[in-house]
Amino acid sequence: MLAVIQRVSEAKVEIDGQINAQIKQGFLILVGIHQHDTEADSQYLANKISALRIFSDSDGKMNLDIKAIHGQIILVSQFTLHAQTKKGNRPSFIEAARPEQAIPLYHHLIEQLENKLGSPIQTGKFGADMQVSLINDGPVTIIIDSQHPN
Image (tube, rainbow, N blue to C red; front, side, top):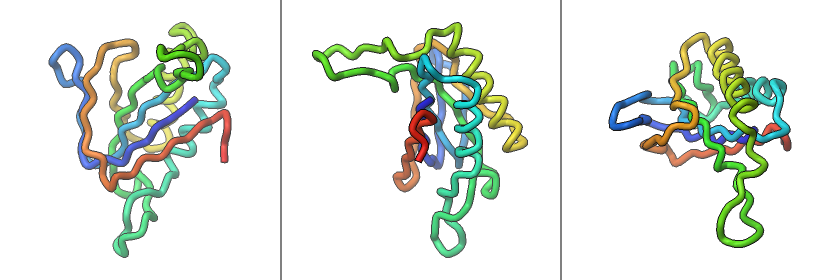
């Protein structure tokens, strides 16, 4: 699983002109599920995301996690994160998980994050055409790949 984590001062997801999710300070996370991903990958991401210390403390150092600042999360599925662009100019998405595999893993990640943070996670709608807007705070953007932990 790939996660693009953006520290935001605000973010929202609109579907068909209606606000589906909206937060103030926290994370907007785009998640791409690979065909080889399992529940272990979603557990790994939930552990890393919930403990990620990228919010400033009173000294201005990135030292606080999302729970410490009472932040919120919007999680958006995005199969295009697994685009293959080596050949030609039209991306291939063959390595992205099919919906029958991806949807349960997406929901597992939501559940794991909610359990770790003790609060609900807002989401986009799997497979929907969404308009995502955000104010990236910093800017701070972190990419985590469960298949290549570092």
